[in-house]
Each structure stands twice: as C-alpha cells, then as structure tokens.
Image 1 (cartoon, rainbow, N blue to C red):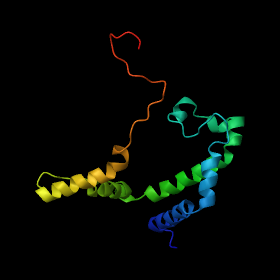
Image 2: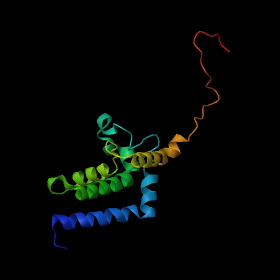
Image 3: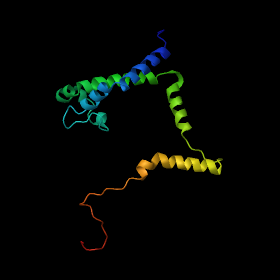
Length: 146
C-alpha cells in the first residue's frame, strides 16, 4: 500500500465488495432498518422534512446500528467514486452508452435482434396481468349503479 488515491480506492472497492458478500451484515442491515416502528429511514424526502431525525432519542437509539452501517457504506462509496476529472462518472456514462441501442444506420437483422433483446428484457413486466381487487368494478359514465 503506497497511500495513493488509487490505492485507497482499490481498498475501498475491496471493502465494499466484502460488505456485499457478507450475508450476515446484509441481513442485519435489512432488518435493522425497521427497528423503529412506524419509521422508515429510507423514506423519500426524509432529510428535507426532518433533517435531525438521527438525533431523536427514540428513533436514533432504535436505528443506531442501521445508521452506523449506512454511514460506513456511504463513506466507502464516496471514496470509490472519488477520482480525478470525474473518472467514475465518465466510466458509468460509458457503460450506459454501451447499453444504448442506436438503430439509425442498422440493418434489418440488427433491428430485429435489438427488438428481440428489448422484448426479452421486459418480458417479466410485459407478461404481468393486472390483479384488480374484488371491490373495484368498472365504471360507465351516465349509467345508473349496476
């Protein structure tokens, strides 16, 4: 270890992968999220609505372990993303561009292959049938109750 930024990012990446491969830690993180009844620390816009929720006696105490794990993951992720000239963002965008389907100059076979690929990607969602609850009925405007 030479202490260079690259070395620090490599170590952070190895540490992050270690977290992801630890089933006990993943389970503890998932379960500790719900230690405070009626409160979800991942609720959207929570920080805008109640920015000091971590300092509340009840909530902060219940979610202490969750907050510890979350802060460790976030700090490790920030080290991974740090780098000169936004290289992480550039690499991420490069991967997204590889997934793009550009059919402007493609031939017939390429278009067909791309459409089949997109169909297979969405097959699980495309094949879902809507399950309406029993109390929902169809509404016809201007018709008396059925």
